[in-house]
Image (cartoon, protein in one colour):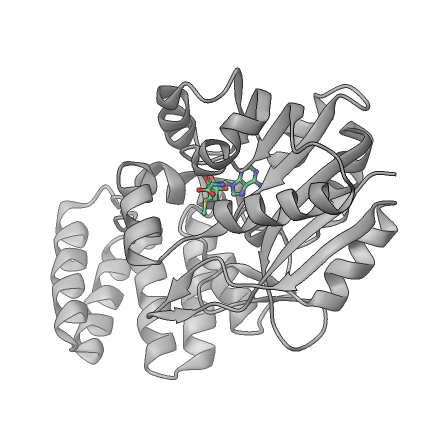
Length: 308
Ligand SMILES: C[S@@+](CC[C@H](N)C(=O)[O-])C[C@H]1O[C@@H](n2cnc3c(N)ncnc32)[C@H](O)[C@@H]1O
């Protein structure tokens, strides 16, 4: 997991109380930790990291309303919401499921970048790129077309694992990612002809109509609640016959929920409807998991859509 984000309160004593509280939290003494965190917020009322940690502890203690109040304070203290308090508020049912704070995604992956591949591939058995590769090859084989793509765009490209899986089949790769540190790692691979620090939808908006033959999003749609904007931009940017291939996390209910891992899970019915509404044809939708959580495969989907 990425290192924990810490935003100093600017008050040495409050910061020290926070550190003691974290020690207590890690040792399992949640009540004493919560008490120290409250003291820290009395010294520094806008101490976002203390409010956020208090929210987590209160959640663990089953104190729903007090947890909601703490997460609200954390977000008020840091309106960019780098800790992602909004996601906890969604999970606690205090707010409707909505977009992830951009600053949270950036802070998370900037911190994660140095350990990302080891954590994801070795610890979580990540297999998103190879699942997408197999799905794309099977669609091309069924259509009796070569699996070669002149121009491909890798959305939420991270360090470049999806581009590495497809590199022999692609002439020109563009990568788009919100995290500058992930983009730095991607640049070091030399797999990409172009890289852009941008939101996925924004990155697609900068691309001409019908200019890409393949768009990939490996373990990236899990950071978007509403898939409609990215799907409709993908349709515009794809050339006729072009493919959009992505993984998603899923759940047995309807619509979009926020899962325990603080990523969105899209129901298969939601994905089918969203792909159709964007004017793409669904070529492949399979129940396949791209990663494990606590050594158990996270329910997932592998999706390929075609622009006709
Ligand atoms: C779990 S990583 C997957 C990276 C890569 N696709 C792979 O398969 O290894 C998710 C990546 O998506 C990026 N990301 C999340 N939300 C994004 C958004 N709205 N726009 C662009 N990138 C985003 C993150 O910064 C991160 O690098």
